[in-house]
Length: 356
Ligand SMILES: Cc1cc2nc3c(=O)[nH]c(=O)nc-3n(C[C@H](O)[C@H](O)[C@H](O)COP(=O)(O)OP(=O)(O)OC[C@H]3O[C@@H](n4cnc5c(N)ncnc54)[C@H](O)[C@@H]3O)c2cc1C
Image 1 (cartoon, helix red, strand yellow):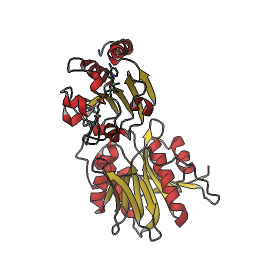
Image 2 (cartoon, rainbow, N blue to C red):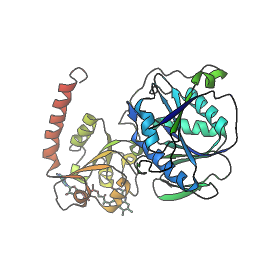
Image 3 (cartoon, rainbow, N blue to C red):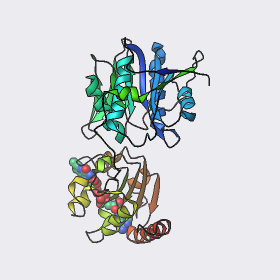
Image 4 (spheres, rainbow, N blue to C red):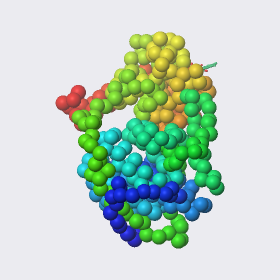
Protein backbone atom coordinates (compact mmCIF):
# COMPACT_ATOMS: atom_id res chain seq x y z
CA UNK A 1 0.00 0.00 0.00
CA UNK A 2 1.43 3.39 -1.00
CA UNK A 3 1.35 6.21 1.53
CA UNK A 4 1.68 9.93 1.42
CA UNK A 5 1.81 11.83 4.65
CA UNK A 6 1.32 15.33 5.96
CA UNK A 7 1.09 17.14 9.26
CA UNK A 8 -2.14 18.88 10.06
CA UNK A 9 -2.64 21.85 12.34
CA UNK A 10 -6.32 21.82 13.07
CA UNK A 11 -6.83 25.45 14.01
CA UNK A 12 -5.05 26.66 10.91
CA UNK A 13 -7.81 27.20 8.49
CA UNK A 14 -11.19 26.43 7.18
CA UNK A 15 -13.27 25.44 5.23
CA UNK A 16 -15.58 24.74 2.44
CA UNK A 17 -17.89 21.76 2.61
CA UNK A 18 -16.09 18.57 1.56
CA UNK A 19 -18.00 15.93 -0.41
CA UNK A 20 -16.60 13.23 1.79
CA UNK A 21 -17.78 10.58 4.17
CA UNK A 22 -15.85 10.36 7.41
CA UNK A 23 -15.78 7.53 9.86
CA UNK A 24 -14.52 7.37 13.43
CA UNK A 25 -12.36 4.25 13.65
CA UNK A 26 -11.38 2.46 16.85
CA UNK A 27 -8.83 -0.17 17.74
CA UNK A 28 -9.23 -3.36 19.76
CA UNK A 29 -5.79 -4.15 21.10
CA UNK A 30 -3.39 -3.72 18.22
CA UNK A 31 -5.89 -4.09 15.39
CA UNK A 32 -8.93 -2.26 14.12
CA UNK A 33 -12.27 -3.16 15.63
CA UNK A 34 -14.55 -5.20 13.38
CA UNK A 35 -17.28 -2.56 13.79
CA UNK A 36 -14.90 0.11 12.44
CA UNK A 37 -14.19 -2.00 9.37
CA UNK A 38 -17.91 -2.50 8.88
CA UNK A 39 -18.68 1.23 8.80
CA UNK A 40 -15.61 1.97 6.68
CA UNK A 41 -16.72 -0.62 4.11
CA UNK A 42 -20.21 0.87 4.21
CA UNK A 43 -18.82 4.40 3.77
CA UNK A 44 -16.90 3.21 0.72
CA UNK A 45 -20.02 1.56 -0.69
CA UNK A 46 -22.03 4.77 -0.21
CA UNK A 47 -19.28 7.00 -1.62
CA UNK A 48 -18.46 5.04 -4.80
CA UNK A 49 -21.46 5.94 -6.99
CA UNK A 50 -20.90 9.65 -6.20
CA UNK A 51 -17.11 9.42 -6.54
CA UNK A 52 -16.75 10.92 -3.06
CA UNK A 53 -13.75 10.50 -0.81
CA UNK A 54 -13.69 8.54 2.43
CA UNK A 55 -11.63 9.59 5.43
CA UNK A 56 -11.08 7.85 8.74
CA UNK A 57 -10.14 9.49 12.03
CA UNK A 58 -8.28 7.28 14.45
CA UNK A 59 -6.59 7.78 17.82
CA UNK A 60 -3.72 5.46 18.60
CA UNK A 61 -0.26 5.02 20.05
CA UNK A 62 1.36 4.26 16.68
CA UNK A 63 -0.01 4.12 13.13
CA UNK A 64 1.13 0.48 12.75
CA UNK A 65 -0.83 -1.93 10.65
CA UNK A 66 -4.14 -0.19 11.30
CA UNK A 67 -3.43 2.39 8.62
CA UNK A 68 -2.87 -0.25 5.94
CA UNK A 69 -6.06 -1.97 7.00
CA UNK A 70 -7.98 1.31 6.77
CA UNK A 71 -6.57 1.91 3.28
CA UNK A 72 -7.41 -1.61 2.15
CA UNK A 73 -11.01 -1.16 3.23
CA UNK A 74 -11.59 2.11 1.42
CA UNK A 75 -10.01 5.06 3.25
CA UNK A 76 -8.52 7.72 0.95
CA UNK A 77 -7.26 9.71 3.92
CA UNK A 78 -6.54 8.85 7.51
CA UNK A 79 -6.38 11.51 10.20
CA UNK A 80 -4.13 9.92 12.77
CA UNK A 81 -4.20 11.45 16.25
CA UNK A 82 -1.30 10.20 18.40
CA UNK A 83 -2.63 9.23 21.78
CA UNK A 84 -0.70 7.32 24.42
CA UNK A 85 -3.70 5.57 25.88
CA UNK A 86 -6.63 5.56 23.47
CA UNK A 87 -8.40 3.13 25.79
CA UNK A 88 -8.55 5.75 28.56
CA UNK A 89 -11.26 7.68 26.81
CA UNK A 90 -11.46 11.29 27.84
CA UNK A 91 -14.72 12.71 26.45
CA UNK A 92 -13.73 16.36 26.39
CA UNK A 93 -10.40 15.83 24.69
CA UNK A 94 -11.69 13.54 21.99
CA UNK A 95 -14.70 15.80 21.38
CA UNK A 96 -12.41 18.81 21.05
CA UNK A 97 -10.11 17.03 18.58
CA UNK A 98 -12.97 15.83 16.40
CA UNK A 99 -14.90 19.10 16.46
CA UNK A 100 -11.80 21.01 15.36
CA UNK A 101 -11.17 18.55 12.55
CA UNK A 102 -14.79 18.71 11.44
CA UNK A 103 -14.90 22.49 11.49
CA UNK A 104 -11.76 22.63 9.37
CA UNK A 105 -12.90 20.09 6.78
CA UNK A 106 -16.71 20.10 6.95
CA UNK A 107 -17.33 16.58 5.64
CA UNK A 108 -20.78 15.76 4.36
CA UNK A 109 -21.35 12.63 6.44
CA UNK A 110 -19.82 11.31 9.67
CA UNK A 111 -20.35 7.73 10.87
CA UNK A 112 -19.50 6.07 14.18
CA UNK A 113 -19.68 2.43 15.25
CA UNK A 114 -22.07 1.95 18.20
CA UNK A 115 -20.43 1.21 21.54
CA UNK A 116 -20.17 2.69 25.03
CA UNK A 117 -17.58 5.27 23.98
CA UNK A 118 -19.37 6.47 20.85
CA UNK A 119 -22.74 6.52 22.65
CA UNK A 120 -21.14 9.25 24.74
CA UNK A 121 -18.97 10.86 22.08
CA UNK A 122 -21.32 11.17 19.09
CA UNK A 123 -24.04 13.22 20.89
CA UNK A 124 -21.37 15.56 22.30
CA UNK A 125 -20.04 16.19 18.80
CA UNK A 126 -23.53 16.59 17.31
CA UNK A 127 -24.37 19.16 20.00
CA UNK A 128 -21.16 21.09 19.43
CA UNK A 129 -21.63 21.05 15.63
CA UNK A 130 -25.33 21.90 16.08
CA UNK A 131 -26.39 19.02 13.83
CA UNK A 132 -28.74 16.09 14.26
CA UNK A 133 -27.60 12.57 15.11
CA UNK A 134 -29.22 9.37 13.90
CA UNK A 135 -28.50 6.73 16.55
CA UNK A 136 -28.12 3.02 15.86
CA UNK A 137 -28.82 3.05 12.14
CA UNK A 138 -29.01 -0.36 10.53
CA UNK A 139 -29.30 0.65 6.88
CA UNK A 140 -27.93 3.70 5.06
CA UNK A 141 -28.56 5.29 1.70
CA UNK A 142 -26.98 8.34 0.10
CA UNK A 143 -29.17 10.03 -2.49
CA UNK A 144 -27.91 11.97 -5.52
CA UNK A 145 -28.31 15.29 -3.70
CA UNK A 146 -26.16 13.94 -0.84
CA UNK A 147 -28.97 13.36 1.65
CA UNK A 148 -28.22 10.50 4.01
CA UNK A 149 -31.25 8.35 4.74
CA UNK A 150 -30.99 5.93 7.64
CA UNK A 151 -33.38 3.29 8.87
CA UNK A 152 -33.40 2.26 12.48
CA UNK A 153 -35.45 0.03 14.70
CA UNK A 154 -36.89 1.87 17.67
CA UNK A 155 -39.51 1.71 20.45
CA UNK A 156 -38.30 -1.67 21.72
CA UNK A 157 -37.89 -2.91 18.14
CA UNK A 158 -41.60 -2.42 17.43
CA UNK A 159 -41.15 0.32 14.80
CA UNK A 160 -38.80 0.79 11.88
CA UNK A 161 -38.13 4.47 11.33
CA UNK A 162 -36.58 6.19 8.32
CA UNK A 163 -34.64 9.26 9.43
CA UNK A 164 -32.98 12.14 7.58
CA UNK A 165 -31.18 15.23 8.85
CA UNK A 166 -31.66 17.32 5.71
CA UNK A 167 -30.26 20.72 6.65
CA UNK A 168 -27.10 20.79 8.75
CA UNK A 169 -23.76 19.16 7.90
CA UNK A 170 -22.18 16.78 8.64
CA UNK A 171 -25.06 14.34 8.63
CA UNK A 172 -24.19 12.12 11.58
CA UNK A 173 -25.17 8.55 12.39
CA UNK A 174 -24.02 5.78 14.65
CA UNK A 175 -24.25 2.31 13.14
CA UNK A 176 -24.95 -0.94 15.00
CA UNK A 177 -22.29 -3.64 14.84
CA UNK A 178 -22.82 -6.77 12.78
CA UNK A 179 -25.28 -5.16 10.35
CA UNK A 180 -22.90 -3.94 7.63
CA UNK A 181 -20.59 -6.19 5.62
CA UNK A 182 -16.80 -5.89 5.83
CA UNK A 183 -15.46 -5.53 2.30
CA UNK A 184 -12.12 -4.65 0.77
CA UNK A 185 -11.85 -1.65 -1.55
CA UNK A 186 -11.75 -3.03 -5.10
CA UNK A 187 -11.56 0.27 -7.00
CA UNK A 188 -9.07 0.02 -9.86
CA UNK A 189 -8.40 3.77 -9.90
CA UNK A 190 -7.72 4.31 -6.22
CA UNK A 191 -4.83 6.57 -5.30
CA UNK A 192 -2.45 5.96 -2.38
CA UNK A 193 -4.03 6.67 0.96
CA UNK A 194 -2.85 9.88 2.60
CA UNK A 195 -1.96 9.83 6.28
CA UNK A 196 -2.35 13.14 8.06
CA UNK A 197 -0.94 13.30 11.54
CA UNK A 198 -2.96 15.59 13.77
CA UNK A 199 -1.32 17.40 16.63
CA UNK A 200 -3.75 16.91 19.52
CA UNK A 201 -2.17 19.69 21.58
CA UNK A 202 -3.21 22.21 18.97
CA UNK A 203 -6.80 21.06 19.24
CA UNK A 204 -6.74 21.39 23.00
CA UNK A 205 -5.28 24.87 23.03
CA UNK A 206 -8.53 26.20 24.51
CA UNK A 207 -7.88 24.95 28.07
CA UNK A 208 -7.37 21.95 30.28
CA UNK A 209 -9.86 19.10 30.46
CA UNK A 210 -12.37 19.13 33.33
CA UNK A 211 -12.69 15.34 33.12
CA UNK A 212 -10.15 12.99 34.67
CA UNK A 213 -10.58 9.24 34.18
CA UNK A 214 -9.82 7.62 37.55
CA UNK A 215 -10.79 3.99 36.92
CA UNK A 216 -13.21 1.77 35.08
CA UNK A 217 -15.87 -0.07 37.06
CA UNK A 218 -17.55 -3.04 35.42
CA UNK A 219 -21.35 -2.78 35.39
CA UNK A 220 -23.15 -5.10 37.82
CA UNK A 221 -24.96 -7.67 35.64
CA UNK A 222 -27.71 -7.88 38.28
CA UNK A 223 -28.52 -4.21 37.81
CA UNK A 224 -28.03 -3.48 34.11
CA UNK A 225 -31.02 -3.29 31.81
CA UNK A 226 -31.33 -6.61 29.96
CA UNK A 227 -31.67 -4.64 26.68
CA UNK A 228 -28.03 -3.56 27.12
CA UNK A 229 -26.62 -6.91 28.26
CA UNK A 230 -24.06 -8.78 26.15
CA UNK A 231 -24.50 -12.03 28.04
CA UNK A 232 -27.91 -13.27 29.22
CA UNK A 233 -29.12 -16.37 31.06
CA UNK A 234 -32.87 -16.71 30.57
CA UNK A 235 -35.15 -19.01 32.57
CA UNK A 236 -38.63 -20.26 31.66
CA UNK A 237 -41.39 -22.31 33.20
CA UNK A 238 -39.12 -25.36 33.04
CA UNK A 239 -36.93 -23.64 35.66
CA UNK A 240 -39.57 -24.58 38.24
CA UNK A 241 -40.62 -22.60 41.32
CA UNK A 242 -38.67 -19.81 42.99
CA UNK A 243 -36.40 -22.18 44.95
CA UNK A 244 -35.65 -24.38 41.93
CA UNK A 245 -34.98 -21.28 39.81
CA UNK A 246 -31.86 -20.64 41.96
CA UNK A 247 -29.91 -23.01 39.67
CA UNK A 248 -30.53 -20.66 36.75
CA UNK A 249 -29.61 -17.64 38.90
CA UNK A 250 -26.39 -19.41 39.94
CA UNK A 251 -25.43 -19.96 36.32
CA UNK A 252 -25.97 -16.25 35.60
CA UNK A 253 -23.90 -15.25 38.66
CA UNK A 254 -21.01 -17.55 37.76
CA UNK A 255 -20.87 -16.26 34.19
CA UNK A 256 -21.39 -12.62 35.15
CA UNK A 257 -24.50 -12.67 32.95
CA UNK A 258 -27.71 -10.68 33.24
CA UNK A 259 -30.66 -12.83 34.37
CA UNK A 260 -33.86 -12.70 32.30
CA UNK A 261 -37.03 -14.77 32.01
CA UNK A 262 -40.05 -15.74 29.96
CA UNK A 263 -43.46 -14.34 30.85
CA UNK A 264 -44.38 -17.54 32.68
CA UNK A 265 -41.22 -17.28 34.81
CA UNK A 266 -42.24 -13.71 35.62
CA UNK A 267 -45.84 -14.69 36.39
CA UNK A 268 -44.54 -17.46 38.67
CA UNK A 269 -42.62 -14.85 40.69
CA UNK A 270 -39.20 -16.26 39.80
CA UNK A 271 -37.98 -13.00 38.29
CA UNK A 272 -39.00 -9.32 38.08
CA UNK A 273 -41.22 -8.07 35.26
CA UNK A 274 -38.51 -5.64 34.09
CA UNK A 275 -36.45 -8.72 33.14
CA UNK A 276 -39.06 -10.32 30.85
CA UNK A 277 -37.98 -10.97 27.26
CA UNK A 278 -40.61 -10.89 24.52
CA UNK A 279 -43.47 -9.14 22.83
CA UNK A 280 -44.89 -7.69 26.04
CA UNK A 281 -41.46 -7.48 27.66
CA UNK A 282 -38.11 -6.27 26.39
CA UNK A 283 -36.06 -6.94 23.30
CA UNK A 284 -32.49 -8.04 23.81
CA UNK A 285 -29.45 -8.35 21.56
CA UNK A 286 -26.74 -10.17 23.53
CA UNK A 287 -23.66 -11.78 22.05
CA UNK A 288 -24.66 -14.97 23.86
CA UNK A 289 -27.93 -16.07 25.42
CA UNK A 290 -28.37 -19.28 27.39
CA UNK A 291 -32.03 -20.23 27.53
CA UNK A 292 -33.10 -22.74 30.20
CA UNK A 293 -36.55 -24.37 30.25
CA UNK A 294 -38.11 -21.95 27.74
CA UNK A 295 -40.28 -23.43 24.97
CA UNK A 296 -39.62 -20.67 22.42
CA UNK A 297 -43.17 -19.40 21.81
CA UNK A 298 -43.37 -16.65 19.18
CA UNK A 299 -44.29 -14.02 21.76
CA UNK A 300 -41.03 -14.84 23.55
CA UNK A 301 -38.66 -15.24 20.59
CA UNK A 302 -39.91 -11.91 19.22
CA UNK A 303 -37.77 -10.27 21.88
CA UNK A 304 -34.59 -12.29 21.24
CA UNK A 305 -34.32 -12.14 17.45
CA UNK A 306 -31.16 -10.07 17.69
CA UNK A 307 -29.30 -12.50 19.98
CA UNK A 308 -26.09 -13.47 18.16
CA UNK A 309 -25.63 -16.95 19.62
CA UNK A 310 -28.26 -18.97 21.47
CA UNK A 311 -27.71 -22.05 23.60
CA UNK A 312 -30.94 -23.72 24.71
CA UNK A 313 -31.45 -26.37 27.39
CA UNK A 314 -34.81 -28.10 27.14
CA UNK A 315 -36.00 -31.63 27.89
CA UNK A 316 -38.18 -31.66 24.77
CA UNK A 317 -36.16 -32.12 21.58
CA UNK A 318 -39.10 -30.78 19.57
CA UNK A 319 -39.36 -27.51 21.47
CA UNK A 320 -39.17 -24.55 19.02
CA UNK A 321 -36.27 -23.05 20.98
CA UNK A 322 -34.14 -26.15 20.30
CA UNK A 323 -34.72 -25.69 16.56
CA UNK A 324 -33.87 -22.00 16.74
CA UNK A 325 -30.77 -22.40 18.91
CA UNK A 326 -27.19 -22.55 17.65
CA UNK A 327 -26.60 -25.26 20.24
CA UNK A 328 -29.48 -27.28 21.66
CA UNK A 329 -28.94 -29.34 24.80
CA UNK A 330 -31.76 -31.86 25.26
CA UNK A 331 -32.14 -32.90 28.87
CA UNK A 332 -33.46 -32.05 32.32
CA UNK A 333 -32.04 -28.69 33.38
CA UNK A 334 -32.38 -29.63 37.05
CA UNK A 335 -29.80 -32.35 36.41
CA UNK A 336 -27.67 -30.46 33.88
CA UNK A 337 -27.32 -27.09 35.65
CA UNK A 338 -25.93 -28.28 39.03
CA UNK A 339 -23.23 -30.21 37.15
CA UNK A 340 -22.54 -27.37 34.74
CA UNK A 341 -22.38 -24.80 37.56
CA UNK A 342 -20.00 -27.05 39.50
CA UNK A 343 -17.69 -27.37 36.47
CA UNK A 344 -17.74 -23.61 35.81
CA UNK A 345 -17.00 -22.83 39.48
CA UNK A 346 -14.12 -25.31 39.52
CA UNK A 347 -12.69 -23.77 36.37
CA UNK A 348 -13.02 -20.21 37.72
CA UNK A 349 -11.36 -21.25 41.00
CA UNK A 350 -8.46 -22.69 39.03
CA UNK A 351 -7.86 -19.67 36.84
CA UNK A 352 -8.38 -17.10 39.58
CA UNK A 353 -8.24 -18.64 43.07
CA UNK A 354 -7.87 -15.33 44.98
CA UNK A 355 -10.91 -13.61 43.56
CA UNK A 356 -13.34 -16.36 44.50
C1 LIG B 1 -50.21 -11.09 23.80
C2 LIG B 1 -49.20 -11.98 24.40
C3 LIG B 1 -47.97 -11.46 24.76
C4 LIG B 1 -47.00 -12.29 25.31
N1 LIG B 1 -45.79 -11.77 25.63
C5 LIG B 1 -44.82 -12.57 26.08
C6 LIG B 1 -43.54 -12.08 26.36
O1 LIG B 1 -43.27 -10.88 26.25
N2 LIG B 1 -42.61 -12.94 26.79
C7 LIG B 1 -42.85 -14.27 26.93
O2 LIG B 1 -41.92 -15.01 27.32
N3 LIG B 1 -44.06 -14.75 26.70
C8 LIG B 1 -45.07 -13.95 26.28
N4 LIG B 1 -46.29 -14.46 26.05
C9 LIG B 1 -46.53 -15.85 26.44
C10 LIG B 1 -46.00 -16.85 25.44
O3 LIG B 1 -46.96 -17.06 24.44
C11 LIG B 1 -45.67 -18.19 26.12
O4 LIG B 1 -46.80 -18.66 26.79
C12 LIG B 1 -44.51 -18.10 27.10
O5 LIG B 1 -43.40 -17.52 26.45
C13 LIG B 1 -44.13 -19.49 27.57
O6 LIG B 1 -43.16 -19.41 28.55
P1 LIG B 1 -42.19 -20.65 28.81
O7 LIG B 1 -41.46 -20.97 27.58
O8 LIG B 1 -41.41 -20.31 30.02
O9 LIG B 1 -43.21 -21.80 29.22
P2 LIG B 1 -43.70 -23.05 28.41
O10 LIG B 1 -44.16 -22.68 27.07
O11 LIG B 1 -44.62 -23.79 29.30
O12 LIG B 1 -42.39 -23.90 28.17
C14 LIG B 1 -41.64 -24.49 29.20
C15 LIG B 1 -40.54 -25.28 28.51
O13 LIG B 1 -39.69 -25.81 29.50
C16 LIG B 1 -39.35 -27.14 29.15
N5 LIG B 1 -39.06 -27.85 30.38
C17 LIG B 1 -39.93 -28.18 31.38
N6 LIG B 1 -39.27 -28.79 32.38
C18 LIG B 1 -37.96 -28.83 32.01
C19 LIG B 1 -36.78 -29.34 32.62
N7 LIG B 1 -36.83 -29.91 33.82
N8 LIG B 1 -35.62 -29.23 31.95
C20 LIG B 1 -35.57 -28.66 30.73
N9 LIG B 1 -36.66 -28.17 30.10
C21 LIG B 1 -37.82 -28.25 30.74
C22 LIG B 1 -40.55 -27.69 28.42
O14 LIG B 1 -40.18 -28.74 27.55
C23 LIG B 1 -41.06 -26.45 27.69
O15 LIG B 1 -40.51 -26.39 26.38
C24 LIG B 1 -47.28 -13.66 25.52
C25 LIG B 1 -48.51 -14.18 25.14
C26 LIG B 1 -49.46 -13.35 24.61
C27 LIG B 1 -50.77 -13.94 24.22
